[in-house]
Length: 324
Image (tube, rainbow, N blue to C red):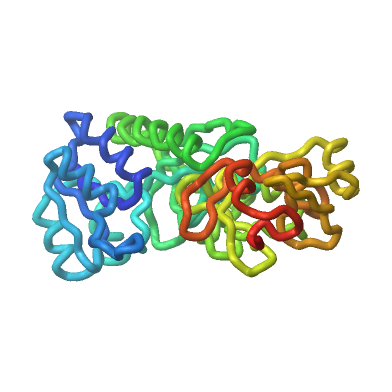
């Protein structure tokens, strides 16, 4: 059965590679987003799906508008029976919606976490499991009927990167199985619907007014592709790549403010009302409400990621690690 694949992200690229290994369903055409400028130099970079399609020797199109007349004509010439959509990042509209069987590979157990950031939101919420659903794409937001789904446990130390790697493998296998077996579609239940809203700047900021357990989950959910940040006293933002909760006893003692921090031969008492991280016992800690979060791997503005100990060696201790 010939297919067309529409996708953009690294997750979608992994699913594409699995589909291409299936002789019966190797895509006749791959459609992805145009190259975009990124990085400090604002150089053009191809989407991961474009790179994979070229490596696989698959025909590739990168239209400005997948729903436009030129793009839909190109898709029609590929004469595929099924169009697979995975993490494309733009809405599929008419005439594609009614013109093809559209299968969507969605990384959640629908109807939980419909929307743009289902993997991240599952980790942020502290879900014990998530999964992948193969659904028919409709005009609603991830609300179409589901033909296959499988669960995946979320481990206590999972980051987006580790969880997404397992989900994309699962998604590729489920997709091929759905194309081979053609299981029946079942409408999603109305109960249990949640929405994985698109991630924004507020999701990245570690606000100490929130519980430490929520912030620890946010760090993992945003690593390594987006990254969490904490604001320092001088207003700059320190990237946070890895963090850990202190146990209850350590959190209580740490929040008490009785220890001294020593960095480069200097020492300072922690400040009780600090809103950013403090240095105590040579550790970079964020007092939260409630709990304490230890920042383990950080990235200063314009710098590289490093262990907190290395970061602290270049900064004066106290309530504002960003201040010398």
